[in-house]
Length: 375
Image 1 (cartoon, one colour):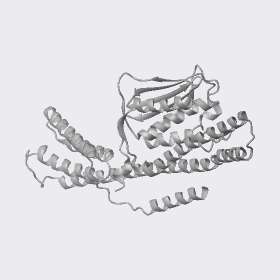
Image 2 (cartoon, one colour; image 1 turned 180 degrees about the horizontal axis):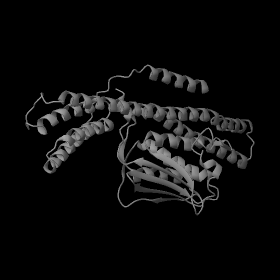
Image 3 (cartoon, helix red, strand yellow; image 1 turned 135 degrees about the horizontal axis):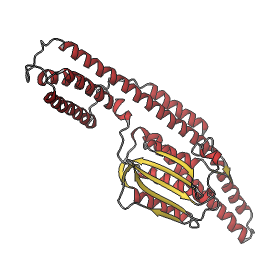
Image 4 (cartoon, helix red, strand yellow; image 1 turned 45 degrees about the horizontal axis):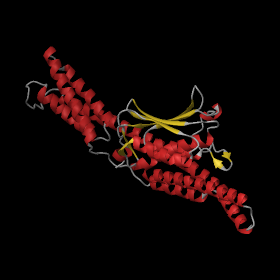
């Protein structure tokens, strides 16, 4: 398992190194909207200022600032260069005497054009490099997390498999075992089997992130339905710890991979059921918050030890066994999934006791930079 993880990581690294950067002249309607809006605003602003002041000194400065902003907030070089060309022609045609005529003999015109062109190229280049650096850092973080998860899983699978094999062998070799002992052994086999099933579900989630993180398929989903389905499955597995649902009055449609987000909610609910000592109930809530859908899973148990709060989502740091069960794997999977969705996740202790796990997902689908700048 360890060799396979290393091999997979090396293969992916080699394939990424083979990708050569290309000129990034990419058209997207989103960037076109930014380009059109900013140039329109600059034109209207210059028209307004001309009614106040007959001087045209400010026109070139406003359009140069527009070139900088377009280059900064669009991907690649296309719209930055276009804004330079359109800006210079617009200054010449609309705001320079004789008005509404092109005159290329105006003093300083070539210099203005050259300066605006250089500004757009420089700003576009810097912006593209910054986005590439952020993307590499993001991918490195996800890759390290996946590798740690797979290493931890390879270790944790051994204990329940050994337990199942041993119990099954004992049942076969002891035909005269009492009914009570036989029932306990079968219950142990069932418990270990269910844990293995959930571990495999987490492994599938990791694989799904591994293959789709660069192009995660997100569609608008009713968050209430995802929560309800996760809670329904939880109640079947853990009927002894009641689960409450607190939902907003309005339906929240959230861009997400429904299977992965349901896995996150299931992992957080299971974490409360298994590790929240003394808990009598668990509550999951949903609300809208500053352009995000905020999910919370609370319990009224003993809470999280303060020394573990900062590392609870780290599979390597929180890899503590509890009767052969890893406490960190499910939470690490949650973190990987939420990061892949462009969200954030955190844990804290409630003031009135118990733990609270909270994650947020953007309500507006964010473009993955790699899809636009790495073509």
